[in-house]
Length: 427
Image 1: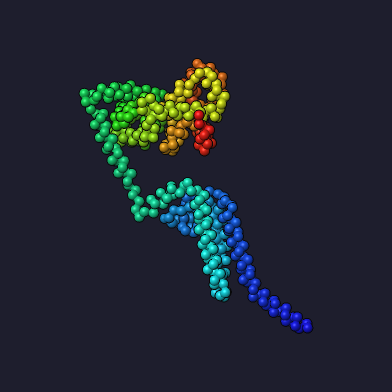
Image 2: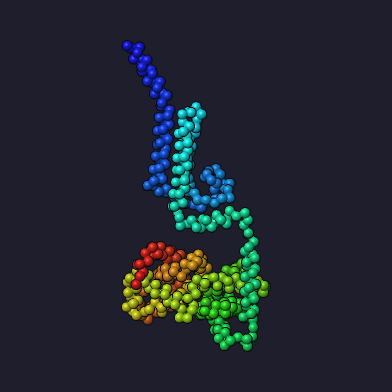
């Protein structure tokens, strides 16, 4: 009996040894699948989604040797997690594909299919995480995947645009008054009056050649945009572009610049560049400078609503004193704060303006709300006459980049808050 029992036990042990590799393999593979499915279903993948150069399989050792294809990847923390999962799956497939396990050939096909499906699911999950960026990624991919990327196109366009400006200036500006209409003569006279008033605190803009360049740019622009023509305040909008382009040739402080140090050709090129930048800026806000300037009036009304939502005591006090927002904010929108802050801060401010692109008019509301509420405590103590004087001569002479950064930071914060809840601003 004992011999029979021992033989039976040996047979069961041998049988279990034959089955254990497969059952263990099933258990490991199923557990891995459950881990991956648990990650992909019901859980978000932490970290940022980055736009990086990479090959089809993310490999940290090859990050310094990128391929020419652009694709989405996880941040490095997520890449570590995904690499660990992928490695585990590869180990399962390799063990299933062991030639000694012929019985597992069918399971190999099934496992490979599951891995492919999980890979596709993970890819869709990542793409869905930032779907709003898909259009931008597609544009980059389309350009960079081309067989030829034209690098000298900029020079050709720049040359053509500069010649176009010079042709327009010679056609419209460099002519005698006898060839102008009465309206054109009056417009040119107004521009000639406004140019010496442009940024009066900076001596550079008082140079005769600088004022002549401003006059030529403004008049040419006004003639080519008859719907608005020249409006006082546009003269200020040229100055940031002029300083930026001149800084390529002139060193040191703006107060020490002399435009006479430049050749006529360079001056003409700078004029042309300023003209086209001004045209591009004003293209998105044409109704700010047409008859009655309805675009500015609309934004002033929105500014009043934003201030009321953010700081109701200030809004109520201004209203009780009988002060209209148009009485002080109109100039802010018309000149884009150039007359309100020191000129050495304008370039930083305009970096933000230009970065907003077509969304600039709407974002101006939040910048100006933040600018006004910088002095919320002071405003509450002033009566009507004091409010008018204070807002026309704001104490910004000693401002540094720090004060401006605070204004812009609050503007970004409030814009983020209200753009998702536009009904809060409905009257």
